[in-house]
Length: 335
Image 1 (tube, rainbow, N blue to C red):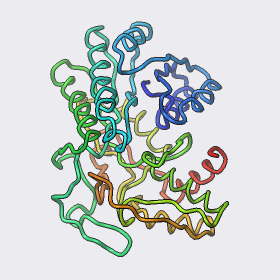
Image 2 (image 1 turned 30 degrees about the horizontal axis):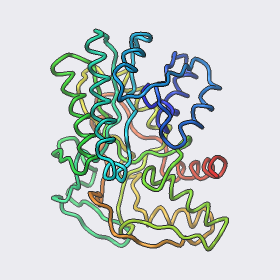
Image 3 (image 1 turned 90 degrees about the vertical axis):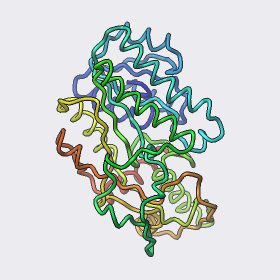
C-alpha cells in the first residue's frame, strides 16, 4: 500500500490487518500526521513498514521484488491544491512520475496485482460550464440532481488537477495497453479518524478542529475561502474502506473509473457544516471570508450509480453520524 501512513491508508491498513491480510506499508512519512499514524499502525498485527519514496523507481522496484503483492492500493500523492500551485514540480514528480514508477515496475517485473488508485473529482475541472443555482446556504446543479457521473468530460485545471488527472489516465491506459488490472476512484470529500487535517487539505477535519478551538476559546477566529456556499458530498472513512475492499473482491472488468462520494443525501456546504457544528457543540463560530480559491468547484456531488451496479457498493454512514464521530476523534487526538 503506497502512502499507507496517510489518513485513507491507515484506515485501509487497519481493516486489512484485522481481517487477516498481510500488509506492506510503503511511505516516506512526509505528510503531516503520517509519523503518528505509523506509530499507531505498528500496534496492529500483520503489518510491515517499508520506508520508500514513490518518486524513486529503485525504492518501488525493491519493494515489489520483495513482496510480489496480489493487491496494491496506490494512495501516495501530493494532495493539496495550494501546494501544487506553490511547487508544481513536486506535485508532478509525486503524482505523475510516482504513478509511472509504480506501473512500470509492475509491468517490467511481470507481476499481476489489482491496482486501485486514489484519484480526485478535480479531474473534472471547475465545472464552470454547468448551470449553477445559488440558494440560501448552498450552490446547486439543477441539471444533475443525482450528482456528477463518469460521462462528464474531463477538464484538468491547476497543477494538481493536471497531475492527478494524468495519473488517473495512465492507470486506465495501462489496462488497455498492458492488461494491468487497474481501478480508478475519483473521490469527492472523505473524512474520519486518523485524519490530521491542515488548512489546505481535509476541509471537514480542519473546520471541525476550528470549531473545537472555538469551544475552548469563544474569541477564536478562522478564515474561509469564498462565501461558504461551496458544496461537496462527504464520505466517512468506514464507507471508503468498504468501497476499496468490495472493489478488489468483486470487480470483474478492470480499467474502469468510478466517482466515489457520499452522494446527494450526504452533501453539505461550508455554511451547512458550520450550522451543524454550532448546534452540536453549542457554540457560535467566528470567521473571515477570503477570495475564492483558484479552480475551486462551486459544487461537486458524486453520482455513485456505476459503483453500485458494478461492485455493489453504496455509502452507509450518514453525514450527521460521521460528523459526530469526527468531532469525537479530533477532540481526543488533535492538539
